[in-house]
Length: 80
Image (cartoon, rainbow, N blue to C red; front, side):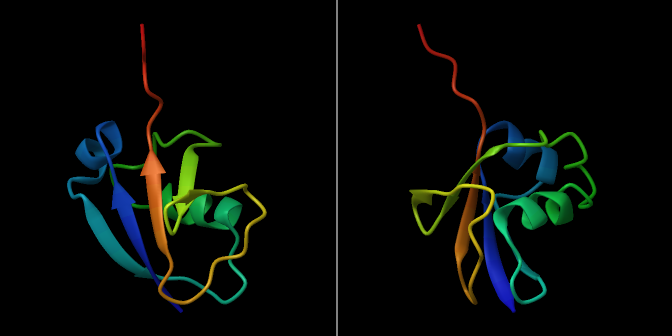
C-alpha cells in the first residue's frame, strides 16, 4: 500500500524534500513507519519517537496506517 509522507522544518532539510510517496506493507503501524523512514538517506537522525500526525491528527505509535494516508513528521518546537 502507498502512503504520503510530509516533512517539516529540520526534517524537510534532512530529507531534502517536503514530501515523498512510499510503499509500505499492509498493517504497518506508525512505529513501523518510523523505522522505515529512518532508513531513507538523510533521515537516519530521525528520533526514535518523533511527533507524527496521520491525516492531520496526532497519532500514537500503535496506530495502523491505511492506503493513501498522509503522515506528517513534526519536529519539536521551541517556545518561549
